[in-house]
Image 1 (cartoon, one colour):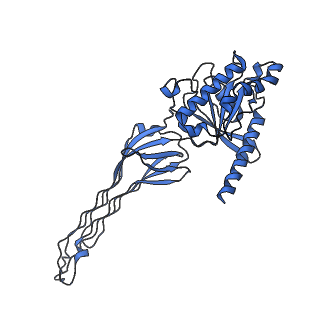
Image 2: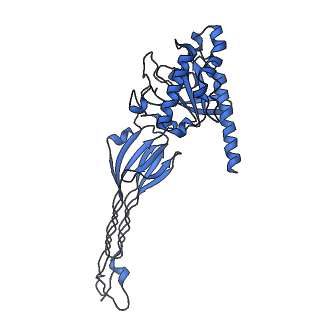
Image 3: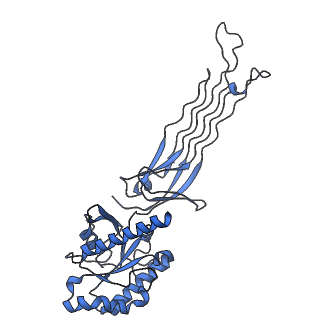
Length: 353
């Protein structure tokens, strides 16, 4: 199924049913009086988070969602029926904005979350409601009110703890496949990954986290080069970013430092808050290095790219050497990430208390 992370839809809640003007007419019951019933309420439009969905592609084909109106009232004080519910199922992690004003309406972050996006109209009342000692035969009723109609911008942001970010062919998909059961497309050509992939990494007994592989970005991404910033929004919910860089760069530590500066610059152009988030540098393809290079390269890269890695509060100044192809260092990396996530969780809970 094609991955789609943006959609624009129109929703229209049901109108309220009209009240009824009616009088009781039965044999042997003279002057029966008013008995017009109320209308039924219009149906709300609700977005419901469905854990079985991972794309907004369905909304490319069905853009309009209209709820049923309430039924009109009837004689014998019969109330109009309320229409059937109108749940619109969306993936977990969907962010909803108003298309007209751009305001944030809400987010759906857990399976089963519900978000009211258009309220149904209120029912009208029948003439029974208007009878009194001085008005025994009212012919007055009220119509139902119209339901809300809105245009919405849906944006899917994947729920992941850690995000992989790097240039094309850095080995992000290979690392995701090594650390998790995910099987992303892997190939020896640029932009193999065309949309984000998720994998659950098991770091130990009852210990796991979600890792997201983001399509590679290149220099000039903020101007639309390559895939541009199309998928960087998916890093917005991550707590840790791994900058994955090819350790076999022909220019050595200086070439790697240039790639790191490119990544940091493009990330800052997209969102300054993301550029200040916890970020670690991971050097991949250690299997292609000789023993001397494996021993000295991390320190050389840390020295050559010290200006780009000097981000307050991050651990990116300590490059981690791994081989995603052979799995060397991957288990230690997963355990280190898990330990950091647990510390962050404990710190957050302490600050919240």
